[in-house]
Image 1: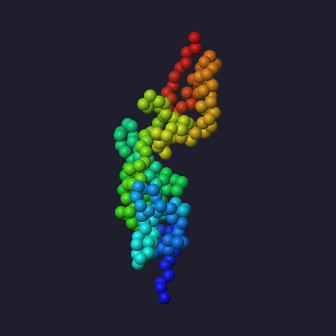
Image 2 (image 1 turned 60 degrees about the vertical axis):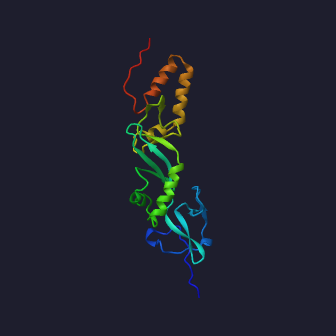
Image 3 (image 1 turned 135 degrees about the vertical axis):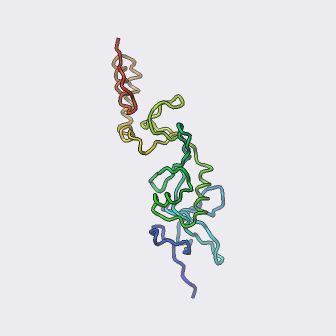
Length: 212
């Protein structure tokens, strides 16, 4: 009697995972990764694990590679020119100086990387097509634009430990509307409103407005 194969357990704990386990592909809901290759690599429906398809005993079977970490973008610090990567696992994001830091990735995700070579291949292929963004840690002028978290800008990623993030995103629409109305008013009251609104920016320095 043929030995029954164990089905994949997408929610298995790290201690229950083994690179030697075989899985029945019919019992898994897998999505091929669009990496410019064939469907050799897949991800499960829960976006928890990457799989690699291996032919074994005339069957194509999925084997767990590691946690389904996505490379969102490449980051460049405009001051130091240091480069890093913004990664995502499920709903959490984190920044790493290199995608080859598998120990930190395992620590963030809580899951082991069972096939390191396949795992790094998946991330490297994502790096080739991901966008590049600037990594900022303070509001202010940069490349002729004023950057602040209250304005969504696709080319910017903010450091998580930047102190003003929660403050700036609180009632952001009201803050922008106040500045817009003040600029359109163009009279004394409007200008004073604008000066008051600008004083709310955390990185603003003390200043005096002379009314004459």
